Image (cartoon, rainbow, N blue to C red):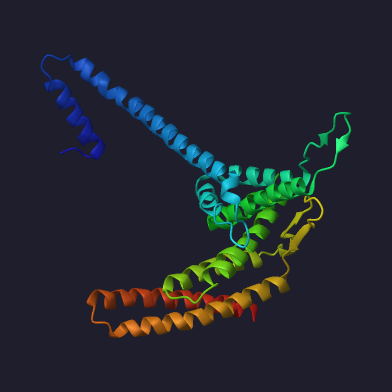
Length: 310
């Protein structure tokens, strides 16, 4: 019996090659030797195909985010932008995310629009309508940057902090801005104006709310919180500059307010769950156990976050 799996397969190959009729033994052995190279080539082609598919997803998501038709409503929720921003955040690499958000903020703050000139060659001031359009385009870019920052995976956010903030990377300032915009998007869009905007009727709303709150808490607990900020200065009058810097006090107030709202919502959801305990539907009763377990886990995490700020 062969002493190892490798010896066993070598023996099989030799016996197979020797038993071929009408084919040269050397040809069979040569073909066997060439198999690893062929497999490597196939793997490379598959990787190239996968990368092409990924890039296509990134390009299409970017086009969707920047399409003016998807930015008709930006406040309080950028409905048309969000699905594309989520896809971009899911498929873009860390380097692509950093570069794109840097460019968006650079365009907003430093981008200049070519002035019009009259028939004599003199510059003509922008009309009120043109100024509104310029400011709207800048606001559109900012909404994209916020949404992408909010939808990034926690793993990528942690990697950005390591590679840019702690390592003095090229995009260190952009990394601080991403953290601020992430906090804003989670707070203002996903929680305040979405999940917590109406009475919760399902456990999923509570578990998702706690997930987003936990991501906010992660940002707020960074030791460099005083550097987490974003400043927008590129709007044309009458639009005013925008600036928000995250402080410990601000983070505490935001988190405790949201925690209270989640707790209030969870009481209603738990009452709804209790009503289903008496259901005659056995499948529904069985599902209740899983729902209660997820709720208990979420509320336990919520309590832990609350304890950190009281």
